[in-house]
Image (cartoon, rainbow, N blue to C red):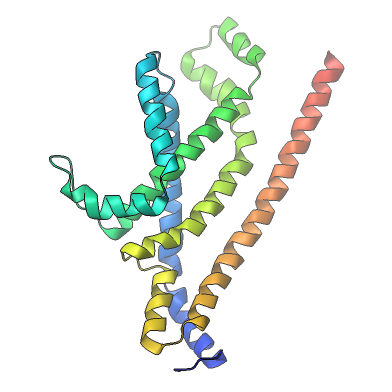
Length: 235
């Protein structure tokens, strides 16, 4: 196996071994993304409070997280956070990576939510208020059903980007496909085949997803154009 050149024998031997780490990679992607979607709503609510000084504090915290590389945040949560007095605690590599990636991407997803809400026509909100709908009914029956569909393509794009960032977790010992590929290469001195497998797996999973999201985005744009034309005719 110790060869400087490509070996199909090594490729076929390494493929099932690396494939075992795919469930960890996909699992970390899913839980991080769910956390990001939940935390995105929390950012949105915190920045919508009537007290402006508090809003500014939340805004700059979110901007700091968004402007810091995810790898730094992963290292901080895994290595530095346990040393913070009184509040620090230790995380497993998987949990540290999940929290870092989820919180990081939540800062972007909160802006997606905001843009979706802002896309709801002002008249719709005024009409729901005129009908004396409760705040809960106004959000669940009027605002969110119109705000969420336009955000689906962008949320899908961030899911793909998050999936591509998950290999960063290998730096703290999360045993995903990249970590297994590196370990296999270190044992056999054959890195080209296992790393090629990793690249192919990411391509096979992310490229069809990107095509699906582009198709969905086109469908949403056509629906929006029809809505705009209908509004234009009625006016």
